[in-house]
Length: 97
Length: 201
Image (cartoon, rainbow over all chains, first blue to last red; front, side, top):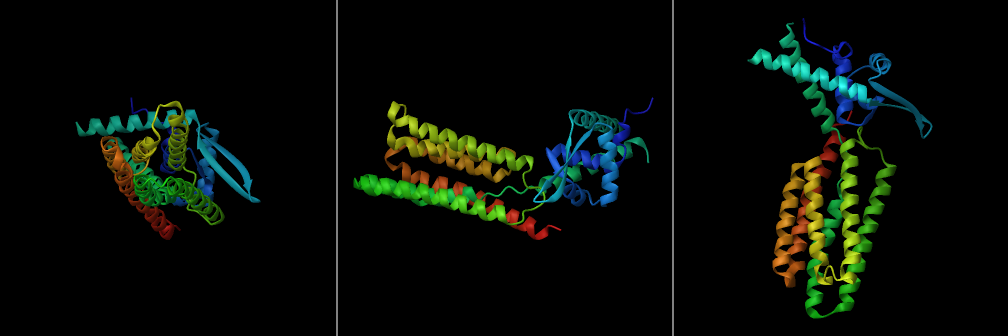
């Protein structure tokens, strides 16, 4: 049986989004775009997948009449990330042993 | 790529993202610089006036220092709120720093106000109490933000111990310790924010 990877976090783009949101309680769309060097379209697609999976909560609001999209990790997303991280660490440790 | 190679690459990627995210935090530290500069002069002068028996100058100095500190912090906050800030403002670390500062200052204000009337603390020991408050605050900031605040906290704590041992000289000891202990890491943090602003896309 292969390692127990989280299928939603197999993509580095989504892993990056979740990693940023583990560090910050929430991040704006612009923050994520600049931190991960992703295009608007690409980021939008991956955010939607994470939102559909229940890992991320996306909030849209208006600040000074400008639209502001913020994303935050849900408890399920946090749990999934920690589980995925533990799997990665186990594999890396086994490879070193 | 094999599973161990993928795992190692992903772990490295996560580390990089977290490091980049952490570097983009924007917690301004000018409050620490202002208040550090104020106590640097306030406390030694207060002790000097106390030794001279000049209670009027002592009281006016205290009121003036408090008013100046509040004014400077308020003006800087207003100016900052009007200008653009870096991506990453209001981050988790920034919020933690604000919470720590509010918690410590509130505790200091309450203890300073209640201490002398209740006999829990002599009036002349209030600066020492603030030395301990600053030391605690700097150490906590050192844990959540930059290590330099932790070292500054230990320096201020040493000053507070000195003030407890030689209470008659407490202002002369605490002024430089608290002042430099807040100014140095505060300026380092401000320089960092300035650099990040220059590097921001």
